Amino acid sequence: MGDYRIDQRNKVKRVPERGYYDEETVFEILDAGKICHASFVVGDQPFVIPTIYGREGNSLYLHGATTSRLIKQLETGVQMSLAVTHLDGLVLARSAFHHSMNYRSVVVFGTAKLVTDEKKLHALKVISDQLVPGRWEESRQPNSKELKATSVLEIKIDQASAKIRTGGPKDDKEDYELDIWAGVVPMVTTYQTVVPDSELRNGIETPSSVLNLIN
Amino acid sequence: MGDYRIDQRNKVKRVPERGYYDEETVFEILDAGKICHASFVVGDQPFVIPTIYGREGNSLYLHGATTSRLIKQLETGVQMSLAVTHLDGLVLARSAFHHSMNYRSVVVFGTAKLVTDEKKLHALKVISDQLVPGRWEESRQPNSKELKATSVLEIKIDQASAKIRTGGPKDDKEDYELDIWAGVVPMVTTYQTVVPDSELRNGIETPSSVLNLIN
Image (cartoon, rainbow over all chains, first blue to last red; front, side, top):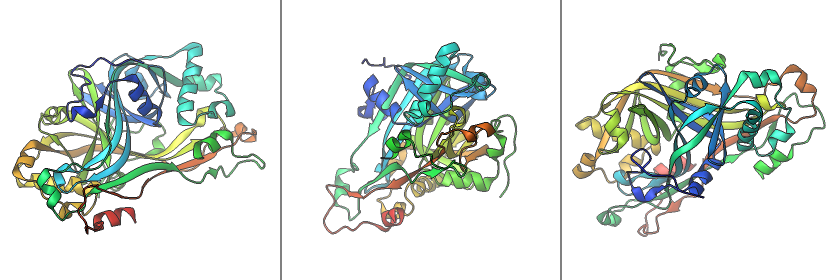
């Protein structure tokens, strides 16, 4: 896998040693996410919208109602940006100034185009696989009315950068002498006990997609 | 508390019954977050950046290095948008089409201005209180060099909307007869066992800010 080209648009300026530009790191962070925050401009007004997505190769897929602002704006091929962020912990330093978080984030730049025809169904499967791997095959497949009401966008990643912070706090040398606690409070997002639908028919077991997710 | 005015910019178009425009709902979602995704435009290029924040009244505070793109762009008073999103669960329907997530999100619109003088220290405390309530008083306070290197922005919330989805899947009537499992996989973000700094001096106990957070 390769590296993304670096210029002013995607260069990590603050704490540059936390920046990564290789596809492997970028893909790993993207693949660990369920939602992204997509950003686009209408007039001089930026919008940022949380939405689910899927990654395959160097492409990201977003979907939405054909009439949604996200779709109507991005399908015109304007510049867009999206971010995926995982919070891994609160970093408490001795000084207020050096408080931080542990995180893994990716910012992507590119333009979108509409996905059509048979590729559209595949792209929807990619999005479904990102949400719950294996669920697509278990589900009732989209019919033509549903496909017509849904638009799918492909964003070929033009540039990206990842930013990662791990480890403990870094204080100024003289602050290590202070009687102030310092450390990390790790954060993790987990799945809880599954809640079957109240109208679930008798005798339908929890499927493998869900068991694989929670175990 | 009041309601935000509704127009094309902040109106929830998709599934409008999930939209809320009252300060109480918006503040509750903002107060439960640790980071936001802030969006702004440079030329025709939208950027989206994850960053910590604090809320007080109808204002949000962001901070960053004086030289950062986020600060340099937003301090000019351009339109911006930011989102805070909490994921509460994966919603698995019988049909691929009706898969969804449970979530609470807020999108804010406004413009920023630099916070100066004595209000700056207060704004930094608001950000600190959002990250770890009570930690500010335990920490070594910012010195003049640190304050000079940090810029703080205030965004008075001009408009906002919240969007909330809760509960189980909603399938098409005829799909309830299918032999397909449906339900919700709840998600929750929790704090894990605290990791004291490896250079922590002997005899310094875990402070009340951390105990309050994790208990």
